[in-house]
Image (cartoon, rainbow, N blue to C red; front, side, top):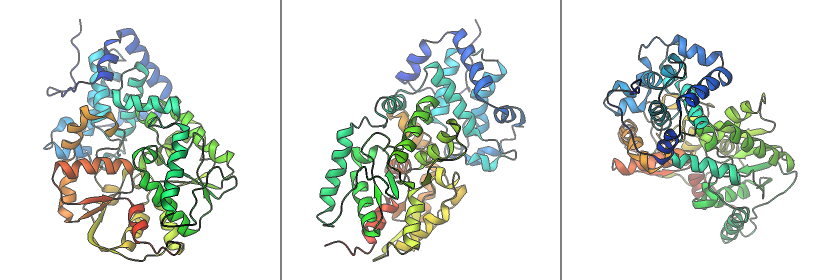
Amino acid sequence: MTKPLTQTDKWRKVEDAGLDRGAARLTPERIEKVINEVIDKETSIRFQAYMRDCVRCGLCAEGCHYFLSRDRDPSYSPVAKMHQTAWEMVRRKGKVSAEFVRNAVQLAHTECNLCRRCLHYCPFGIDTAYVMGIVRRIGNRLGVTPQYIQDTANSHSATMNQMWVKEDEWIDSLKWQEDEARDEFPDLRIPLEKEGAEIMYSVIAPEPKFRTQLIYQAAAIFHEAGMDYTFPATPGWDNSDMAMFVGNNEIMGRLKRLHFETAQRLRVKRIVMGECGHAFRSVYDVGNRWLGWRDSPIEIVHGVQFYHELLTSGRIQVETQIEDLVTFHDPCNIIRGRGLMEQGREVAKAFCKNYIEMTPNREHNLCCAAGGGVINCGPPFKETRVKGNRAKAEQLKATGAKIVIAPCHNCHGGLEDIIHAYHLDMKLMFLGDIIYKHMKKTKAV
């Protein structure tokens, strides 16, 4: 019997029910068949070029926060991750063991945030995130996926939102926040199913589940700005997408199609999304491509763009400014993926008297280590994630800031854990938090 490949001499296996049970059901024939099907039928010249052109120079290592945080252990470098996963699958033409598959999928899900920072360090522009996505896709086809994130993808499939929120719960959450907000803004309404509105506002499922204050704040900002908008009452309101991160492209396609079809049914002119990075990536870059669309059928605007638009057009005005020292975290998906770095800063600086940059920043900023679905792999991998981002903690600490603005839900989850684990004296805020608290409220009592 061929000795199972070990990804490194210091391989770091973490027990996980989804990975372990999935791997236990595999047969050599199925592994070989699925790997070759995915590589032959679902990848393109792009994948082949990445496999062929990497010269193993290791320059990508400086771009990876896991490498930087793990005392520059080369096994955490992007090139080593390629070696421990896709390269061996290709070199052995799919003839790898169940143990190899299990460990490769664990690595692809929990030691790479798909942040694409390493791409900037590669002289050939090799996108390791894309390759790790292919490894996740192979794992998904084989039924080998971390349990927690698979449960979230299952929720998407069953309810079309990631938190198992029922339709009446979604509507109740909106009405609840409307009731709360009317104590401050007596004329405020949260529109539902308003056909022909200019904007459909969409959020991610954690907002009605446990961050309902963000719905309140968004409604207050929309109200103060006098915007014509609506929420949908039906599935399609959740723009998040863990199916994208587990490699279940079929469910991802269903989610994105429903999201756009809901906006089309309401005949809105554009969709404004809340402050979420991965959802934006799914909607404007990945999901639409899977569906074969050249572009989105309806204009998509991220929350950062929208707030910048409200501020620069004078629809919202600054009443007061934050006195504490503030810094800005660049979320990977809307900065490296979309280039919204300056718009985010301009909004932040308008409301903050004392501002300091992290170093490095903008497209070179370090990831939060939660994105790419890594935080959704759950408690078994929390230590891997937090220890894998000591570099971010050091970057935050060096600013001396008391407040970190991060316009992304996943970034909040990751940075909260880092701030707690490394005992940093700072708090996190969304742009919506500071706008709501410090804008001029002409319609409030």
